[in-house]
Length: 427
Image (cartoon, rainbow, N blue to C red; front, side, top):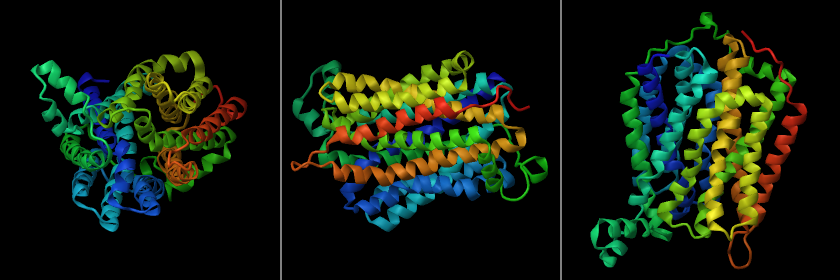
């Protein structure tokens, strides 16, 4: 791949996942501050998975067959970014819900579109995709760290009257917002995400041209989602699809609870997102070695390690909350969880399936990764949280974390016993 094109694709991934990483981690604590009911919060949180499901059945196919990929990316981020920028000024349910729905309906298809643009410009996806997709990991990290300075109690800093740059920096980093002030400051996440979306809208017009995939070009006739559903008649595809659902649910349960859990073990408000980003930092290394790991371990073993990473992390959260240092360090496993399973699934689909079925197969798995898995997590999570309050009003995180821990172990066992892909890949 041309180095100039690779850099553009890398930067595309940086901006794409910067947008998502800016607003997503803290929204779970922000919505209650607006006075939304549990069901209203669930509806807002579910706009993202709803958009993924709509994308599977309509918008991905519509975009693929009617628009050049880079132009669809530009228009989607222009409108979606404007919707995101409006969210800080909305405090009632319906306007907030509709703005978030507009953003998600336009943003979610771009995740597949950026993959399509990347794969269209690669000669060896197994060795090249990990490096390009690493840009998304860096983007998520970059979205987290500015908030160590944004979500700061500046009155506390002023009252401390630090002398010199070193003392000032230490005071700032140790003066994170808490409680209602932290919830109010979360509006900055929407502003940062919206600005990044507008930036990507402009940058998209500089990306390599990827023309629309007409039916006669191999996109298939009729509805692509119907064709992709036929793939589930293949036993090992069905197994992987169901395991992907479990892993996606477990993955999103981590995001639903991690911020609140980290705060409960003493992590300051302005450090919650950076601590969660440790996993993305580890993901950089993991993505870099993914190609070698796949060749050495094979598809099944690599995926099993990725799934078990979730189980190990939740086990530490459940049994060792009294050790904040260990809680922080265990987030390193997120890199293995993501790269060794989700990224591997994307590469597996591109490697195994014939060209005329790859787009449909990617959509089929995105239905689980971005749609049904998060949807179930957003519905089950609030129920589990509500059921684990004790009389003192404190969440029983141990009970919360054991469920996804056991679910991940079960998924790994299913992969080990029933996932048997053929040794020869499609041509």
